[in-house]
Each structure stands twice: as C-alpha cells, then as structure tokens.
Length: 232
Image (cartoon, rainbow, N blue to C red; front, side):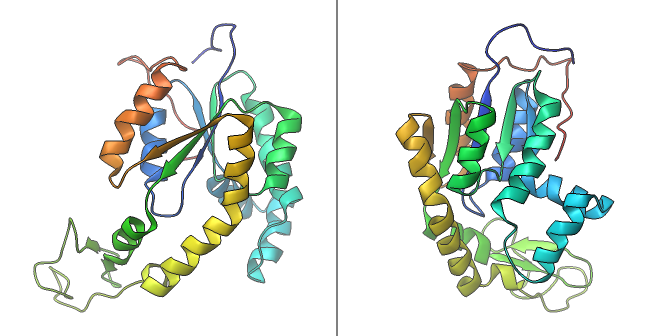
C-alpha cells in the first residue's frame, strides 16, 4: 500500500469496556477501511517477548501487579506512531488516562474517538456466560454456543470451568475499574468535541453505525486490496 493522497490523515481512537466488542469492531474497521490499527496491548506483549528496554521495564511493574506508568506507555506508543505518520490510523487501548491523552495531543491532533457504549449488564451477561474445557481450551458460551449437556465438554464429557476473569465478581470489578479510569478520558474528548458514542447491546447492530460514520472520513479498501494491521 502506498501513501494515501495528500489530505488530512485520520487520527482516531477506539474505546470501550472489556467485553464491549472492541476487538471485533476494530478488526472490521481494518478489513473495510485503508488504515493502520495499533493496539497498546499487542504492542506491549511484543516488547515483552522481544525483551526491549521498554519491555523489560514494563515487566517489573506487571510482575508486581502494578499498572504501567503513563510516561512508559506514552513513550512506547508515540515511538511506534512515528512509523505511521503517512497513514490513517486507529489507536486501541491508548490513551487510558488523561495524562496519556494530553501527551498524545502534544504530538498529534485526534480527530475522532469512537466510544462503544454497551450497558454493563449486557457485558456481564456476555462475559459470565463463557465457560472453557481446561484440557483442550475449547470455549463455550451459554448464550450462543452452549455445550450439549450443561457443564460438560461435548467431546470428553469432562467438567467445564469458568476462568477467574469471567466470574461475575471479577467482571464487576473490571468494569468498575474501567469506568473509574476512562470516564475522565471520555470527558476530556467530549469537551474537545471529538467523541462519537455508538450505543447498543449487540456488536452486529453497533457495527453498521460505526461503518456508516467512518465512510464519511476514510477511503474504503477495494476488494483486490488487503491491508495487514501492524498489531492484531
């Protein structure tokens, strides 16, 4: 893919709580539009794996169960964005705090923040419906992919378990933490007039709204052309 034509390149951010369908929507955006998708989580994992300087420092915080400091995450993301200056791009998982958003603003102007506004009750139902078979990693969902017999793996007939992350109390805690951390960031972008919220309880109903909105801002990918996201 060559550099886009000389015009304003879209600088966008996607936000949404865990379980809101952010990963699905991001992958559909990449599939339909000519832009690069940069996920902070994927970038961080890559740096941890390659044991880069930032990766080694980040690991010391992760091992202690602490959040990675704003300046470290900002350094990691802004460094990667230097490689994307010729493209439209979508940030995922960054900025997570107001200081991160302010640091990003010093480097570039964000034009659009896509906020997936999914009710917490819907997310709780979605996440707590997930059960796995520990031996194989097979995943079941009580709502749309249930096991033939409640609580048992279809193939081995062994008991299914719920990951700690998917237990109701953990999901509630994660959602509250997300709200506390990101509400100030949403308010920050709302005041700047760049926040676009898309509400709903189903990703397949939210996606057409996001797609229609982005059609006014981005070139679509032609059938013959495919884009490989940097971090996916």
